[in-house]
Length: 269
Image 1 (tube, one colour):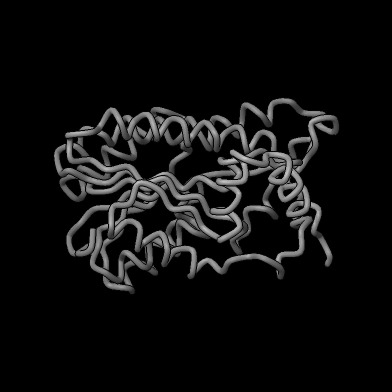
Image 2 (tube, one colour; image 1 turned 45 degrees about the vertical axis):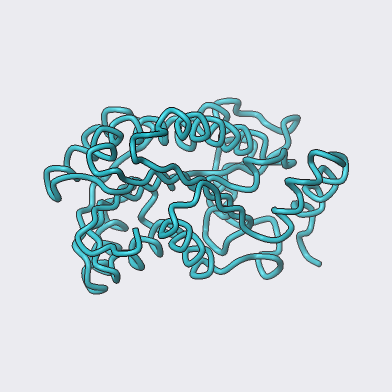
């Protein structure tokens, strides 16, 4: 992926945050972008940024929780650019509620459909095209996909599912030329936590943590993702704490639990 000139990259959740910034960076390197998200208006703005950066872009309003919408989005990308070199499964929503506070259990199904099944649907439909070009399959997961986190049980479950799915598909694709990269960021400065759903299934509207502390800016996050894509890495775990926690989970899981709890409860300090 070092040379993106003429390469076609599909990005879900492309209307904001990591997806938007990644699209613009790849466009500046000459990529063709297929931009997928629910908001046509927001996608139009990202499409304009991509074209101003020097790339070509197609925006396709898509709800990744709908398998048919995912199929149509992939087909439109192939029709426009002739194939697919990379799929970035980035669409996602999160939550902020303890299980004993939840009053709307449907949020568990909702997060699983968007975060996990949306990735399955898009990957399934893109896979023949990725195989044809020996492409790259990318999953934007989370450190929450590595360990349990309080107030994020549905989110953690969906990200654990993503990790298991893409680890399994990576093995299945050995010998095909298609590589699989799982990205696990920590807290990144996007609006995802402000749009998190609360115990009643409605957006909380404002992040409940101190976003000025231990939060990576989106440009740094995307730079790491692009570097991992260039090298076709199998995994990218961001933050030193995240890397240490993987080891500690094996030898001192209780310590990891306390780290996770502190990370969430650190609101104002």
